Length: 399
Image 1 (cartoon, rainbow, N blue to C red):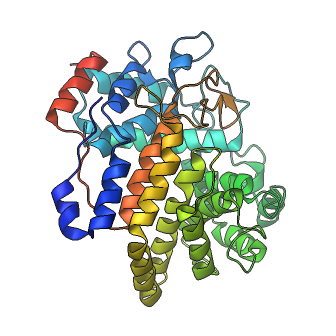
Image 2 (cartoon, rainbow, N blue to C red):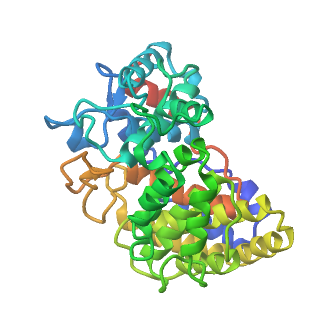
């Protein structure tokens, strides 16, 4: 397999030799096998992408919104098709019909026939946001008002708590939201709690309850900048999820410097990883915290943080490479666990959980690279060229 492209000369000119060499080592993990594997997951009869090969090849599984959105996001990121609006017309029509066809006209959420409506709030929220964003990239929008639209409208008209309202119970009052957030037990498992909070943060904002959520998060944070007492991957992963919630809510992040130090220690630390998310989350957290420094006008600490990261650039890239390669598969994809794809997605059965890559994990592998480069100000350019695009579209069978 061919290693995908990078702007090596530009990196060599803008960064020191050790950082450049470390980048080259990391880049070696990403091959044209990625997009060939992507193409194999396309289901033209439905208009979406499967989560994995085992999902594609076995009864009981269908393409889903999140896999489709994540995969198409990296079709753009890699430069295969830098703007989804430029996909072949026939493929665009199939994608639009697939996504729009999953929306429920009564509540505005998007549901899959293989999973039904009895899914988690995080599943519903993620599918809605992924559908909205992907449809927008394709030049269109959902057919019906989304749940987000309805929550905003109900809150503006002060009908959110009315009988028969489509607004979820936990968003109908400040007390209801606090009780719901408290049920997550954020100081016992900040990753799961942070994940649930971030998944619904847009709805919280739409309901006008950002301050309620923000005050709850502020009050439960420890002095170390985390929501757990000890620095572990779980605590660091929780920090990432919660930092995303602060970003959506537009609130300053408390104890930011201590949180930043914790994220650096995990990102560069030689700590064995059990899941690919453990590699992805620390650089994503660092990026979120840098953005929060800019949001709050903390220019001095922002410059100091960037300088510290640059000093440890080679160390970060080598640590990322060492950890990501644990999950690399022979076909160019990446698995969520070292020897298996994750069998569920947001609580829903998504694959057989065998030794294979899955779309979410491959996105995490590519995202670990992308965010590590972002925080180090490395502009590597697109990884795909015109020849790659031609091969990819041919494999899709779309014109």
